[in-house]
Length: 340
Image (cartoon, rainbow, N blue to C red):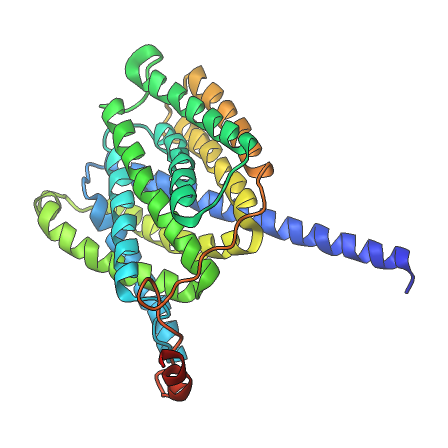
């Protein structure tokens, strides 16, 4: 086999891998848009129970991935309290964003979701030691500018959708703070530890936090719900799409990196615009399209001008993690040596 044939083979393999990653990324993007659509549909049907929506999702994650961990006879690689924090912030992010659908349009919510990038930059800078180039910061600034156009539209300059769009926008932005904390923590654990364990623990502790929070905030709302087939189908659609999103996101992030992952999720905003126009029969103001273009340019600049990431600091015993353990006690000796 000569050098030319080897080069041709390598190029074909890279092309197939790139195509595969693009398709995976678009699948995640479509799932995210479908989650937004079903959450908006549930709100339009008069159901104000954002925590209940995600409770079913966390239950499935805990059931499926917990079963895998039990089959492996594997104990957690990370201390439980870090997963509790991760589950807590993830629940709050979902709660605030799903609550925003009661007041704002699906287009505004999905666009403002991009605010997560700005918070993630701040968190990774201070806690993970990540450093960003000037071009990346410029791209992030463009994203914030584009999101400002959404706020301008929803303030009444151009007329955004929803009953109280500004309140909805504030809820989304607050939710992105928690999403950023969740994403940074999930990225940290996925890259350093086990993906199945991370998703399982998000499900377990997310379910625990959701049940407690639901019993405090949503019991009266649930009692007033007039259940129908449409509501049940909406909850079922949200739960299934949520399961797919949580299952695929860490896999795609680890396989393709943050650049392609962020660019892939950007197209979920396009799906949201299509849904708003063709399903909700709502008009989309020109400022939304301008905002989308500005955010798109900002994300492209941010995702394609990154420096080589600094090594993620290791998690040590007292600070963040414990060593890998098998339930059958095969590695007792090695654990004793490491603890000594």
